[in-house]
Amino acid sequence: MAENSLINKLKTIHLGRILVIDVAMLSISFIAMQFTEEVHWTMLDFVVMGILLFITGVFIDYFLMYISNPKKKFLYVIAALIVFGLIWVELAVGII
Image 1 (cartoon, rainbow, N blue to C red):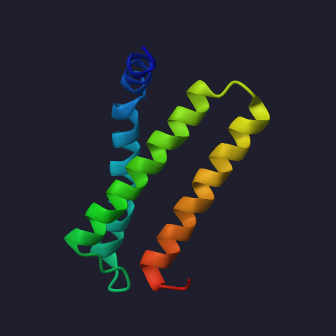
Image 2 (cartoon, one colour):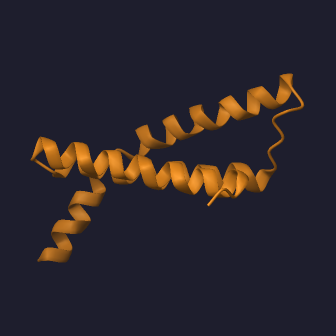
């Protein structure tokens, strides 16, 4: 019964909206590559960032839809964004 509930919750996550936002964000880097030599992404960079953006988007959408306490909702979204930022920085320049 609990497994069925989880499956139903995952079905209602807005995957299409998340994918559109991901593509829009990835297109910023693609467009920047056309105008400057300072941005140089490989296909692997686009794939990794696409996966990272998608997973972050799914978590944020889940938190916004299924957590009723506004304070917890805010904290979870901020935590997801911080984790996203830390992973992004680590992959980009290896600071950590």
